[in-house]
Amino acid sequence: MKQLFSFAAAALMVSMLTVSCGTARKTVPAVEGEQEVAIVFNEPKYHSDKEFFRDSQSGISKDLSAAKKVAMQNTRQSIGAMVEAQIGLVVENYTTNEQTDSDSSVGNDLEELGRTVVNSQLSGLEIVAEKAFKLPDGSYRYHVCMQLSKDALGDALEEAIEKDAKLKLKVKKNSFRAIYEEVIKK
Image (tube, rainbow, N blue to C red; front, top):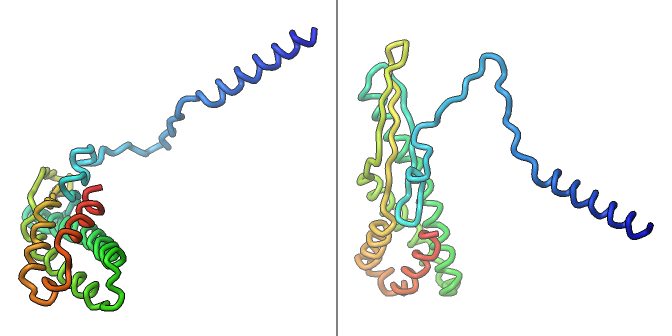
């Protein structure tokens, strides 16, 4: 009798765990008047990966070219912020690994050089995809996805370090590139 009771209790627990852990996702019901909206350029191919920084933004204006300018400027700013944050991590990791605390100007100089290189690289962003929509009020909504090559950015940083006489002497090029690859290519 005890064995039967133990077996029944175990079977009940297993079935409860199976039911409670195996429940499917519940869909959120739409409130009256709500409409689901498809987000433009939301597929994985439009997201940053190991090769490119990517972002998409939109702009709205009565003039199509103005909507395009707004969207492109928003995308440049977004990618610029993303890249500057990553360059900050590279510089921080490099100065920590190379223990350049005795000369903190190396970190500051690298950060300044990084900002300069990022700004110059942002002017050369590539357009991945673009879409324009005419809205009911006659204005335009323009969507754009742009990208920046991580390899090209790394090459530009190395070239800038090579041209800077002070940094050229203080920065170990191979070590810097290895840390760049480790941080940026995640």
